[in-house]
Image (cartoon, rainbow, N blue to C red; front, side, top):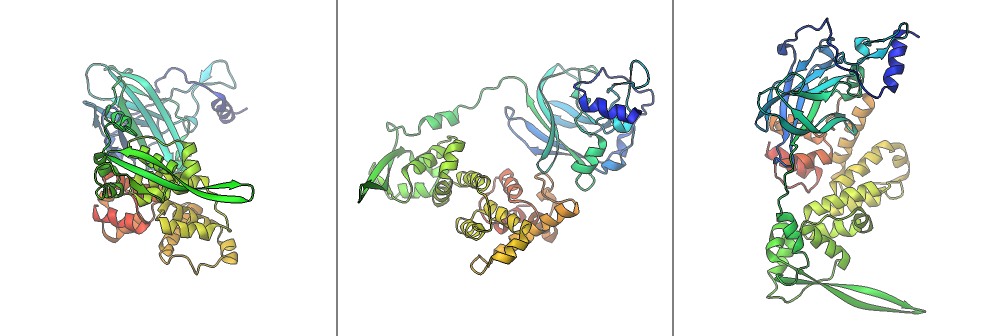
Length: 449
């Protein structure tokens, strides 16, 4: 067995790493050789943490030596931090020698990547929860720790992964975008921080009759079959609510309240009582279960769209897309439904199906009755498909484009290649409306970039 085979066999079965052993050949490395960028992706409050991206451009050109490539410093929780990347490992992996007793260090190209989060500034110990991740599309590699104590000496000031579960060659093949490697770092103070009680207090008001100031009466028809006789009867269910809460979370229901005096019931006859209950529960801050979504997805999309509960509509749409199998038989119906309900994510899924099955679609389907605005979405799907097939870098990653740096026709082209989930996320981060067609979402991003 040669050294390379021994390295592969050992690394495939190893479950830990040895103590870090300094490399006699380690050379000092100047930060000037590394083109990096720090970006705070989502500034959160302390309890939810803060997320940063650290981008190493021209990854394939980074020196092939066991020495750290430090990022610029960034500030978080009153301290200065940096990422230290060892693209060829930090020399800590020891493998059994195939020819002699003892262990040895594998060749540098056989060393797993090492990534560390380092506290640069001095001070008392800091307890931090962190995660370090690299990702590409749906593929993701994460290292995390819930109780890292960062101190002042060399060992205590750094935490991370001497053996990140990939090699430099893996990163080059799978995780680079335009030649750059982006490392995502999420940090959170490790101490217990109680939650703001406002949301639970509001949820406790759901269905509370004592303090309510408006009543909805949901009326629905019931079909009762008795042998050969079929009777239709109406039943109604009342729901107590609060105008102030509705004004901030459902503008359409709030508008209905303006037409009612006192506690006179407002009649709702176009929504099932269970669906209306779920909608109100969501408005008051409640979480709808997977089972409830699956059982009522289309009804929830319709009700949320009509009464202006945007986030509920989008969440229900996600469940609908994930729970629906698109086929040649239903593709036109789904496309028309997506257009009628303004479901951009569903339309995107249909377009992906059409592109992936273009020969069958051309053979069996006619598009005479589909909306004319589908062709831009179809072109976007074709572009994504071409980039995937050709191996080119696509703009499908949620953190790939900074809208603030793009403008004019170039920015519009970049945004047009993003997926709906990425467009919605960028709008949400800017505090903008996340509902609408692909064109509407792109126009909103262009206007506020």
